[in-house]
Length: 335
Image (cartoon, rainbow, N blue to C red):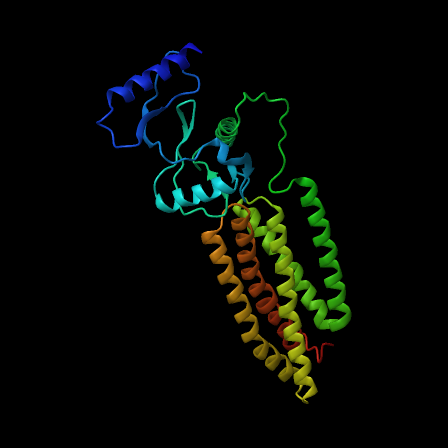
């Protein structure tokens, strides 16, 4: 268009006039409004390095993705050469900005928070934007990046929007698998540990409900990594109950009374349960701090699961048993 021609002419003339005054291997570009018909430049100038040797040809793909809370973001994947070059740039420029330029117009300039060495990166958008503006910006950035990787003009034939992570079909299958696994665990605990197994089932149900309640209060979206973290939560919650019940059995085998077996069983199992949950929580904190996208979502769900497990499967379980024995006079619970 005429506006594009005028803009390119202006940028060329400006950089020629500033030659010798700008640092070596740099050029001045501008962030320009997409709808500007009369303005030749926008209000935001950028002094960019021109010797990065990183172009759109270094990209494999750039797509709109979603974080743990359903907010739009841009997911990038680089080819082998681009991955190495991008790792060098982000390592040397931590805390600075990397500009996305198409047709000499700065489309976006996200900050480099940390070195990116895996060939995959995520551009997060401002939390202050409403969802539609964030979606529009994510589409614009991903389209600009893909356009820069191709020598031909892109023609959009179809657009599909899928749910977070791998789509609703994969999430539904993961949910079904989790439901079946949880039901089998509940049946096993009730059959193998009898009365104490039923108490464990009640605490396990409370544990899962607590996880969903906390996720709902945080406004989080259930993604495939989140489901995996919840399934893992069920696993180590059951492990805690197995430890308690086996310790109680050992005390009974030694000839202890039922009340003594309960007290000693919980006391002996407590150190192992606490140690296991602390190490799991530490792992979740590391993933939450260093991870991005789905990894952070997994870490959030896992950390919530650790907290609810300690509450439901240790504290609530002991309260239920003590209430049955001391208040209702239950002489013995089968285990």
